Length: 203
Image (cartoon, one colour):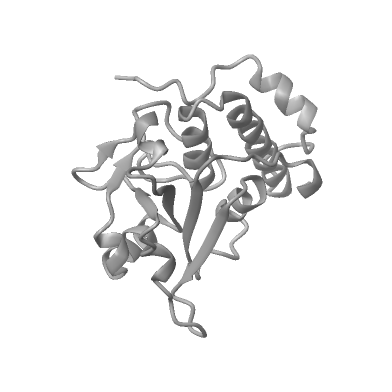
């Protein structure tokens, strides 16, 4: 499957702060982000064997944005992705369960001090493998796909969305929730009949 995943380039840097307890779960989508997107750096938090290093989150040459829907977070606009004062725009995501993500933000000082943004209102999550209590909460891969779409790269976002739904279909087959594993072509045909989930500007 990995050979058929798209590989997308963006003009900014990505940092995934990934909880150690979630990184090896088959439902984790952070690894798919690293497989599909260039310039992704993964920092593992709560690893018993290695001390967490905050330095990649404190580089003065980078303009950091933490993608997390905290109270008071600004709505992410395309202009945010251009960076400020000549610094490299760097998007930070917390990869784990929602409880783990909230805990990482509280415990990592660099994240507490970071500018926080949230995605514009759009369709609820469609990742059927691991459901959040609030459908407005997206998995890590969905979040990245919508940022790529918001930046004006809708063709790349669509290819990533197709790949995500293809993987979802195969996981559902492995769990006995589909009679056959879908092909990527079948998924593309199915998704061609539905609107993209990043139609920003809902109620």
